[in-house]
Each structure stands twice: as C-alpha cells, then as structure tokens.
Image (cartoon, rainbow, N blue to C red; front, top):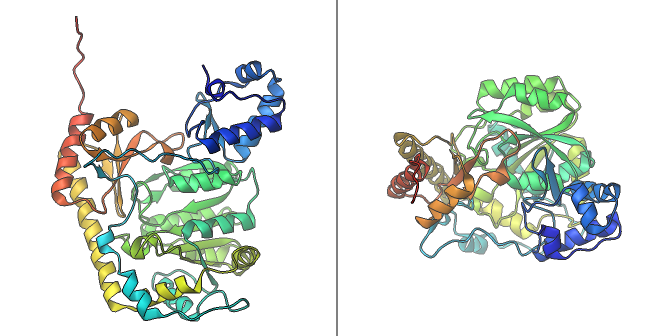
Length: 447
C-alpha cells in the first residue's frame, strides 16, 4: 500500500493533487522523507494522465514540498515549508540530547538584569528602523574582522537576512551553490523559494574552490558560504582558502554571494572573510553576523552588511512587512554588547566550546572513529548506516542528529553531535559507545 493510498487521496487535476499532498503534509499524514509512487504508478492509482501527475509534482518541487533525486524517486521534503505536527527525535528518559545545536545555557548572559538596565523607550511609527548605537558597535566589530560595513541593516536572525537577500535577487528555478554537507534549514529555506541546490564539496578549510567553480559553471547564479563554524562539519576558511574562493568568484562577477557568519564570536576560529573582495569586485553581495549562539537563540537578531543596492532592497521589503526589528530587542542586544562582563562570558564560552569539541574529537580519534570539527559547536561523525547508528546510540542513552537532512548527493552518511554541553567524561563514554556501535560484527547463523 502506498503512502497516498494510506492517506486516501483523490484528485481530478494537477491543482487538486498539489492541494491534497500539501494538506497531508500539514496534517502529519505525509511525513518528511516519505516516498511517493512513480509518476506512472501514481497516475494509475488516481486515474489521471502521467502528464497531469508530472505537472502536479513539478509544482510541489517548485514549492519545496517534495524532492526528486536520481534512483531515489520523489519524496516528501525533509523540511517542507508547511506547518505540521512534526515530531522531534524522541528523547528517552535520562538520555543526553546532543541533536539540537543549542549553545550551553550556562554560558549565555542573564537577560533579566540586562533588560532592567537598558530600560528601552517607547518607539512609534516613522522612527529610524535601527538604533544608531547598535549600528555603531556592529561596525566596530565587523571592521575589526575585516568585513566591509559601509551599508548595514538589522534583521531577525541570519536566516531572515539570507531569505530577504534571496527574495531581492533570485527567482524560482535559479540555482544556488551550497556546502555539501550543509545547514539543513538553509536547504529548506532555499527549496521553499523554488530554488535549486548545487552541492559544493568541502573539507576542514571550507568550500573546495574547484567544486565551487564547477557549481557556477553548471549554472549557479548565487553561492552561500560559511566562513567558520560550518554546520554540520565545523569547517573554517583560512586566509589561503578565502583568497582561492575569491578568485573563483571573480570569474563570475554577476553571481550573488552571501556569507553567513552565524556563530560569530563563539566560533573558536579567526574570521577569514571573502567579503572584502566581494565589496570591491561585484555588485551583489551580503554578509550576516548573528547573535544567537553568543547571546541566546531567542534573541532573533543579526546584522546584515552588503552592497548599497542589496541593503536598500532588503530594507524596502522589511518596510512592506514587519517594518523593523523590535527596538526593545535592539536595545537589549546593545546593552549586552556594551557590558564588559558579557564580553568576558563570550570569551569563556569560546574557550569552553573549543575544549569540549577537542575532547570529543581526541576521544574518537583514539578509538579509530573518523570525525570532523575544526571549530564551532558540532562534530560530524562518519557512519555506514545513519538510522541504525542513531537507534543503537539511543538505546545507550545518546540522542544524536541523523545526517540525512544535512546531506545532498555526493556526501556520505554521518551523524552530528552538538558538543556545547558535553563534559570531558561524557565525551569518553560517547566515544566508547560510538566505537562499539560502529565496530564490524561477525556474521552468524542461528539454527
């Protein structure tokens, strides 16, 4: 019995097929990753022509609801842009959940005391969208890292900034070069806008220049680059790699380039930005700097730098919607940035995350378990079978993230462990369990 038969779908047109599959996703009856029948089989089950079914599936792909891959057929997307009762990974009682990518709450500043100190004033319509003091401090930080910041605006987090830049310049069907493996939520966002993903391989120093060149030559009109703390692998650009990527991009001056420094100060690596070259040699570029990991995920704020035309388009679209990021939120971030105690806490967080990440990597290395994590909050662990590994670790009290949502074709199986709260003794136990779960087993036969 196929997924659609279980869902009891009936459709008399391509539009009805689209509507009912979206309804199935919204209700939870059709789940992320669930396979759909072939076009011919689905046409036979629904009494439609293959042309009609193909048209409906093409529209669902354009909307990011389904994905089609060679030899794997068509499936419900891992992150379809439809609200649904999607269940997170189950966490057994007493298990350690290392799947969510959160920072350590103990290393985040106390927001209550900062709110009491900043005492934001009431703001009305027609006032400037960003606080001058916040922009001034942002410019100071970005200039120290070599990021051009003549034009700046404030957005509701790094992904919000990326989405607004994408909306300003790209259209459904455009191809975007992305890291592979890469950030799952970025993949979902781009697919939701009907954009096609062009995978770019990476190593511990970030995107491989030849792979980026190949993606651009295949027709990618944009690229999203993570300069440090890449999610999920922890890759970070060094100076030579940033220059090499810049040289590749120079050969495609019309391509939109977005740099996503989502970890900022807690990445545990110096920033080697491609942005300085972008600002001198191309018309369309942007770079985000988020506060989520350093100050707290609920502070939905990032600073966006870019060329004047792109920033004008982003701000224009903000005016058509929310208008601005809350000045209360901006005042709170400004107060935190000004506080020397918070700066000290961020330094402590950076050092602590580095120590915890390196502890797990050393423990895995000593047991012969291949893993990556040059910087950031995650370690990317190679496995043969993701589902089997996740299940076996869950039985031992560990919840790790499966790698499938982060991988595009060409990237081998892996699982992701967030190290933000992982103590050294826990790292040893996790490495022991991973080594045992991944060890080859002798074949046996019961009689």
